[in-house]
Image 1 (cartoon, rainbow, N blue to C red):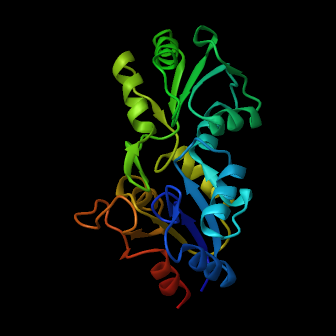
Image 2 (cartoon, helix red, strand yellow):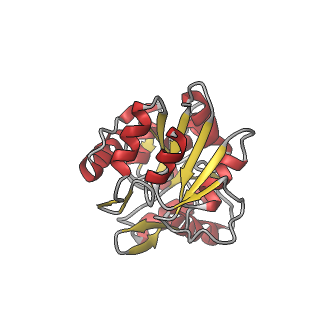
Length: 253
């Protein structure tokens, strides 16, 4: 059997700068068995090219940019038709995704017709103020994702959702969320699927498992190498496994 494997990265393939043991071997075995591997990440800070290079550098698996779908691309898709000047509170991954869609990026909040908020490791108060002021003036408010944390090598770090929450609190305006498990990301995934069954592998019930649960016929596997301990899961996965190696063993047979 072969099909499509939608695979999260942080907490599944690597954790921070550390590879999760066996992940590269598992991915190579799945690909050799005919599985189409799509890396689907809510981390918007990096471009697909940078994500693929990170996979290669950390794990040794030969990741390719065309395998990578980020929440930044999903957010850019929401603005692809109107193309408003957009203020970015986030990383280069967001700016590059917007530019690929021909959406102008502005560093001046008062010029913005939209604000996109993602993971911003260089966050400053001025940056937060510009984004919030633009939203208060009526700019469309889009979050790449609302993950409160992400797994790093030394524990959980604040995620994009923590920054989104600050803008929501300041403005009273809820963000439109583009990443997993929301429809903008699911539309991108459908455009990249091949034939056969679809499995979603991740470590978060609220993003990865919810992504699979939202699509009829998709199945999910939760790995225990990330943020979840595998108890009281909602939605419930089809499989709870130790790691990606066990996923490969089950799917390849």
